[in-house]
Length: 447
Image (cartoon, rainbow, N blue to C red; front, side):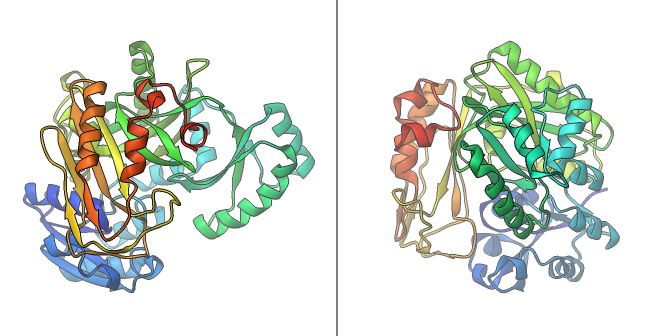
């Protein structure tokens, strides 16, 4: 199987990222866009573009009939969903199959199984991975839920089973807040994810967020591309990521990567994916958290260390090609770091849409910019505020930090505010430089 034309069902920097790999593979591209994105870079670079609806994402980027129609009228054989939007939507994957269009991602069964946070933990446990046993909430009496939560001990974390991307979570420090928070989150989960299933698990007080990049084909072959540390977060949303994790000893690194491969094989996964873990720094133990059945925002740092194009591997898997290399043939070099550049006020953290009067990209050895903006571009207020990512690679973590600091200082985006100053503060904070932090870093060290 060889794709001649792929439709990219996304926007922003990931749409541009996918488009560029398609061009290098000799594959024509179709980009869909809303009325608000008619001047976006992915529209300008694509071989073809189709407007699929108004600015509101539910009427455009989440409009399944319009996207499938765009694929049909342009003759696209496959759809790449990127991340977010429809990338982990089983219904969309199933409809693609019914329409005779290849969904570039894992099989429907994996999307369904691993998209359920409760069920995925059960599968991980069966595969031999350590798991923080969740307390199920559905169809249970309030007093029983409170009793089980008290046995876990505060703090605990309420999670939406269908949540993801940092959404659908709330930390509970006072048991009196548990039941009221459950009621609120049930409504929010139903509205946000279409599923009000919740669960509760123990909150680790000094955690790191470590994830393992997985590659699998449709012939049973699985490899890992090492781990990434995504501990610097704000309200459970990742801000800075690096690879390798500076907190893992080599023995633990091998152990966590093996666990990710074991789970991938157990659930018969067959595409690019990520297995995420919480790492308890005090106990030096890791626990399975979830599996993301899509490409991740932070995939470039893995690409920089391995020189393997993850988007290309995703497409090749969808074309039913076998992996062309074994685990032993993967070479890891140096250290890589990524900062997510957002259109937001660095002080208030409020979005800052508007017209970019002038944009200068940093450059130099070991600097990569994944973005979709340009001078004169109007950042719309309707979507995620991410403008792009600044990615650096160097031989050591120390060199990487200096390179990132230099690159961030070179960024010029006039007309709107960005979070570049926040990244500079984090990069130069002594506890970040000294590898002395947890997922609570911003709350504890940056206030």
